[in-house]
Image (cartoon, rainbow, N blue to C red; front, side):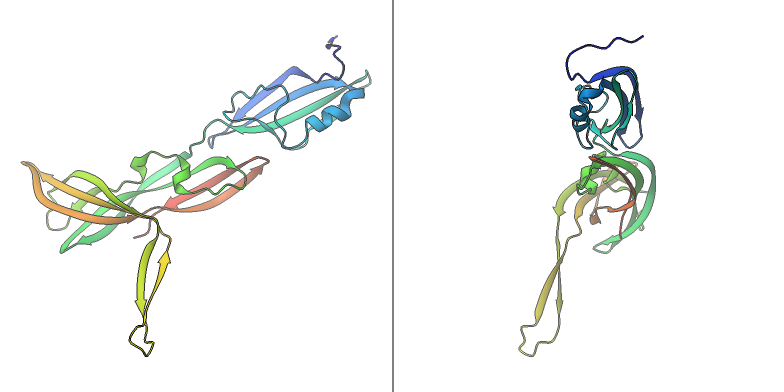
Length: 244
């Protein structure tokens, strides 16, 4: 026989607690609570969807466990009521990378032609429901955004020496003209595609050479492949690829 504390209205966590964690950083905790049936209406409100776990035990979540979906309730014949409660949190704010592969890109700098590689990735992340998920919010290693493996068409024997980011533009201004009849026919528009400028130097077997290039590289496009709703949190599967 289990004897429960007789504190009036107490909501008591039992030993029935399980924890599940997922690659995205999402975690789920299932906990059974019991209370006197007479106090069930009050405790039912405490255990409503979106509420935090009532006993403050958020382990292993880093920023709270929130109830979802509505608890299952069983009224027993001994004067007590059981609540089976599930709650979700997250164990990390960074994305989990499922796959990463190198894409080959091409460019010119002055009269120099070259090719290089960038990462295209897929993965998942647990994010607050309704939050805007961008590449910058994924919390990824900066190396995943930096181009690498530069090869000069005219000097394939050269190796990359240094890659330095020198500029970053959130919105790129582009200009177009059309006849307006008065000679002042220039119009402009802005595209909000972030891009970064890199200065690349090279070396050969004897050390650094004088050849350098500058290249603009677009930030990855982030596409949501699937999303699953868990109350306060949404698990998002994404892909991030580059445009030439």
